[in-house]
Image (cartoon, rainbow, N blue to C red; front, side, top):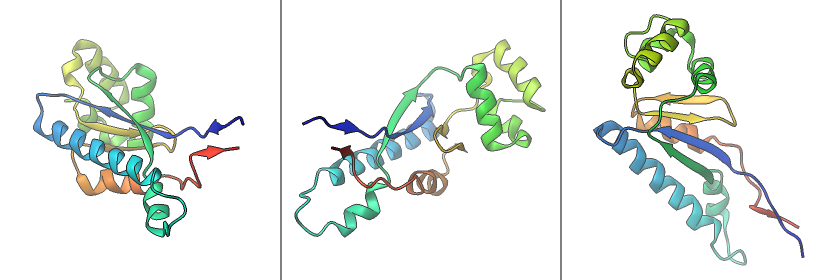
Length: 147
């Protein structure tokens, strides 16, 4: 029997281990991913209405300490809005200035940044409620396998 796995939404955390806010976001994302993974393996014969609600949080977590590529940074600006340049790259006035400052020093990139690439959304900083909203509003998955 051949099974195809549906691809999961990819959530990327641009992370800085020495940053307390970044560590909080990493912990939150790991806990949320683990909870989603646990509920996806519960007994399917029982009542799983609570699982249906939580299953939408099933996602692939990608954690990187590297700054975003130029293309990724453009996407982040598109998702967050051009007026957020200074929140994304320290001291940036606009997208072009942000690109220049990031090339000057990767330390100018303000972490943590959480990005939902599949649905074009981002959360700057460690706003827990916004991060949970981003995750909890991922498109619902009917199941993780198709026959």
